[in-house]
Length: 42
Image (tube, one colour):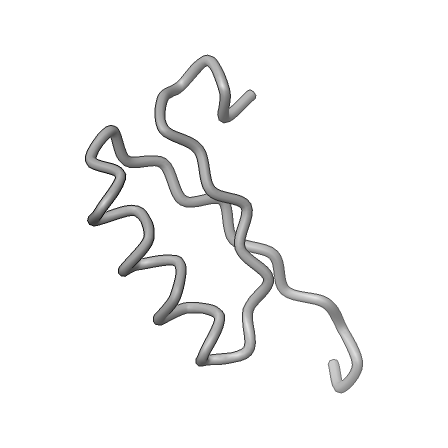
């Protein structure tokens, strides 16, 4: 699976938590798509 792109959708209505989670996942090498609610997630 080397070279595969891993994208994670993170949904949280607390913007500070969303940013912390997204930042940590990016450091781990994931591409992150942040969303503040279910509507924006889809």
